[in-house]
Image 1 (cartoon, rainbow, N blue to C red):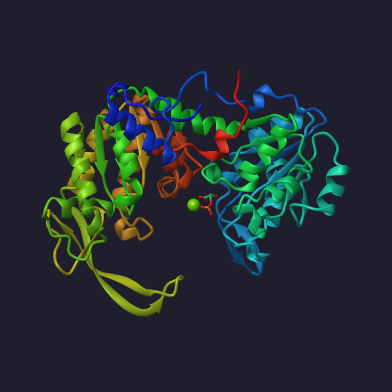
Image 2: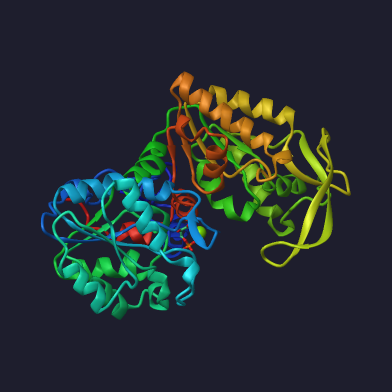
Length: 458
Ligand code: 3PG
Ligand code: MG
C-alpha cells in the first residue's frame, strides 16, 4: 500500500511519542511504516475481470486548455496519454468504460471553458477509435447511453465539478454517479488527495453493493515510484527541492530528512532559509513567519548528518511594477538589471530569481553522485528564460546521471515536470508524476482518500 510514517527510532513505550503519533494520525497521517507497506496493497486492474461489466473509471483529465480561433486546444496531453495503458487493458478485456473527470475549478457552474468535450476528441485521436461523449455526468442521458454500450466501448462524461455536490462529496450525488457502475477503478492519482464524490464517495457506493474498487495502472505506477521506490532508496539518495514557499514543502522536507543523504534547496524558498540564518534577502519572496520552521529543519539536518545545501550564489534582478495587469488583475512586475550575485546577502533593491552558476556546479556534482534522486519544484522563475538556466542545468544533470549511471530519478510532479518537458528531457528520467498537490501530500505521508477507499488485496 501507500502510507507511511512510524520512524525506525520510534519507541512505543515512550508516552510522549505515542501522543505525538496519535496527534499525527488525527491530522491525517497514518501510522504505517515509512513510504509503503507490502501486504497492505490495493486491488489493481490486474486483479479484475471486467468482461461485460460497466467500469466507472475516474481519471484526472484536468489538462491545460488554451482558446485558439474559438476552439479549445489541449496544450499538454500527458495526463491523457498516461491513462492509455489502463484504458486499453480494460477495453480489451471487454469492459464498458465510463470515464469520469473534473477539469479546472468551475465551482458547480456549467463553465463552457472547462468542458471535457475537447478531451473526448483527443482521446479518440490517441486511441484511433471512437470515444462517446455525454454533456452530463449523471441522469437519464448518461444511463441511456451506457445502456447501449457494447463490451470494449468508451464513454467520457462531462466535467463532474459542474455539480457542487462533487467537491462536497455528497452521498446522494455519489449514489447518482454510481448508477452506472458495476466496478470502480481509480486511475486519477492527481486527484487522489481529494475526498470528492467521484474519487471517494462513489467507491463506497460500489463497495457497499459488493463491487470491486481497484487502482488503475497509472495509479499503481505512481504509488510504486513515489512510495515503494523511496521506501528503501539506493544511496546516495539526493533530494532537490525548489519552488516558492517553505510552507508548501516543510512537511516533505521533514520526512525526507529521515531518508535522504543530501538535500539541495533552490527556488524562492531558499531565501526563507537565508533569512533564518540572518542574511539579507532584499526584495526576494520570503515567508518571515516561517523562519522558525526553516531553523528547525536545518537543526534536524545537522543532527541526522544530512548534507543540507542552500544556494551559494544566485541570479538577481530589480523588480519594477508596471501599469499592465497580470491574469489575476495584479500589476505586472518587470525584472530589470539582471545580474549574478555571489554574496549570501541579496542587494536591497533586488529579488533572487534563480540559482547562480556556482550553485549549479555544486548541485550538479551532488546529483552526479546519486543513485536515487527525488526532485520537486523548480530552482528559479523558469518561465522567464533569463531565470531558467538553474532549472535547466539541474534537469540536464538529473537526466545524465539517469542515463549514464542508471540512477533512479523520480520527478515529483507539477512545475518540475513542466520544466523537464520544456527542456525536452522528460523521457530521460525514470519517472515523472502526473500529480501536483497529490504527489506532495503523498510524499508528506498523508493518506490519500482516493487510495484508502480502494479494496484491500488479500
Ligand atoms: C491537479 O491538477 O492538481 C488535480 O487535477 C486536482 O485539481 P484541484 O487542485 O483543483 O483539486
Ligand atoms: Mg492542484
